[in-house]
Image 1 (cartoon, rainbow, N blue to C red):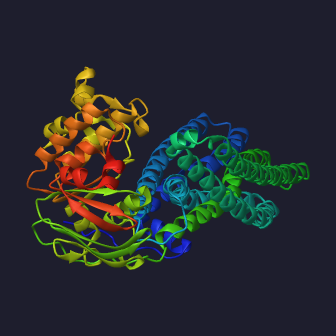
Image 2: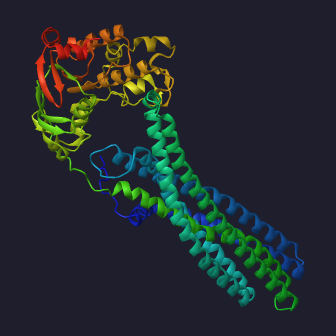
Image 3: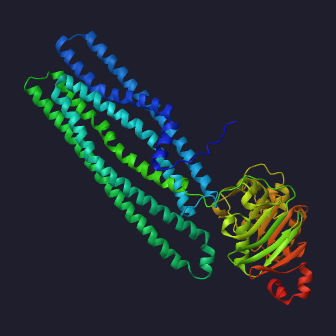
Length: 566
């Protein structure tokens, strides 16, 4: 069994070095094959020059046939080396991009483990576009080296014909790279700013999609859209700036390469006219002046891609090197499934204290929605333990002492706005494919009518965010996922707000039956769920003000009756 790589790279340069080190083998083979490709491309005009020279001098059919065979070998080498070289490099590029996407996503999925001032939409952009652009360094370096090989071969071949032609190529290439290196730095800084603005726009639209329904509810959608339009316009303007810089870079590179090729051609023509080189060498020089344009173009564009890769690596470093908000423990909760809230002060919670015994079904009726959200956030470990006073204990251990994995395995908090993913009903209910209680979870959440409605049943396709499901169907699907996990401790936050009263009554009974013997906490104001609970805790102004069964509270507490009666 392999040990996972837990080391995290520090600066952007370390990220790039790590990518290069992990792909040494692929890069070596890719460089060799791409070097053969460029050498073959450069050898083609050299071979043509030799054919012309020998044909005119010897007029020998054997020499001509041998030269044509040599051309065939060169063409075959060029074709095969390009095909297999790019296949190796692109496979390594794709694999490396995948590694960084997984690493960035792993940081994003541990909300209390990393202190980074980035929203989920920005992290998504970093995990996709920036990861891809960083991995491009795997292709950039071999292409840079192979282009250099072509330039060197051309310079040597021209130098053998006349030293001035070889020096012209070397000096011209050095001058071109000096000019373009200045522009490439501008591209790197502009690209980094563009990526940041695009990420901010992505985060804004992600927030808008999530909150679109409540925004429509209180008429705030127009103001929200104006806010998005502003950040989107900023991203557009920066993209235009980057496009202009890229255009200037490409135009300058093309112009300088054309000037160098023209200078080589004119110089060779002058030398041939003066009798200092023969006709075959002139043909070779003119051919090389044309063929050298492509490796020169690649060679001159490589610094730009290096700067883009570095800018993307710096963006990834924001996530990967963010300081920990808290250091998770390494302990595991004891078996049993008891839950204890001990004098917790956080947000609207004020010295909140209660205990849920193992196997008990407890409902929490929170009079203030904010208090319910704060309690759910603390229990879900979305808030680091040192950000609140008091303690939360699961299985006799404080949350701060437990590893993130053990908390997730032992304690599941299902939010009221649980995400629905693109896939099928089955993959949303059982993402890992290991649950043995999917049928029971489907029945308990009253999702059976959705399954029966479609011919594919549980394999019915679900769009991203459940776009092809109603609000009630999405909520029941999220509840089915929580029940199918069959965790020791399950916390449900308003699991039935989008379903009708009859369905809510059936769900309440089914959940109580399915979770019998397992610790369950439901934060709700639903009379149906409150009624099936073993006891109800009344949460008012951040503290528990009453505790009894639902029916006893209805009979003896007028405030409770007013808050939960429908």
